[in-house]
Image (cartoon, rainbow, N blue to C red; front, side, top):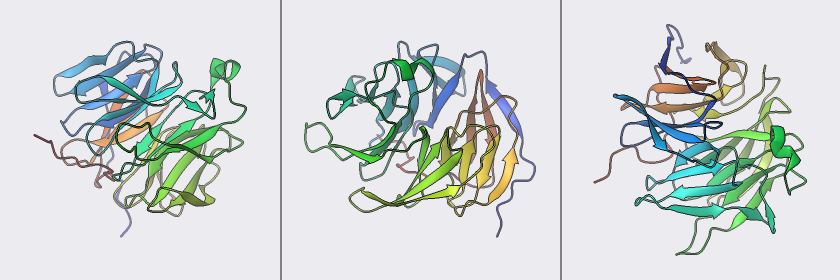
Length: 284
């Protein structure tokens, strides 16, 4: 049965920001999102929008791991960090082969502990980078207190941006802002990637963040919000009042799509649930 996107309504739920990015829904029933130029991570719940973290080091993309710990891409410090349950920050990755990353952008975590992130360079980030390439990276599950092993998964000519996983965690999707497409990689049980291919082509606008629903459909932000089938067929286009940058499923039933769009955050109720890569139930 085809997915029903009729009667979709776009509602603004937070406004007055500079450039919103990195939305992620917490199992404790609130949304976190970044305001990158303002150097903050913000929290949206039933009471409104408040500051979750000041001085966020230019955090862009966010996600949670299976233990409910926040994983963030810090563009200014060029590193990937984890917020522990006691609030302390653990650096997961800041260099590859002795060189600092360009500006980690977006991130996704698989239930078994494998983490993937993109490392492009936009604007003045390109003037200060140590790397002579853009990368998609894989962090293997850490053993004990040791830092996770870092693997270069792909080195595309264009800049990789948004990143997402299929519902079963066996396909990794990466949006490429320069090539205007989405690539897919097959992942094995050890998190290794093979069979690189293009699944979505000729996206209108600059592809940015994306998410996947429980049926495997891709929600890609660019000039508008585009929804594609797992085979890359365009299912629908959802116009957002401001150019969207990223998306996240949320709310108690995981059937609300939150969209970060420049100065605002928007909410869209759907008739499908998001693909959950970590447990959504609150933990005691």
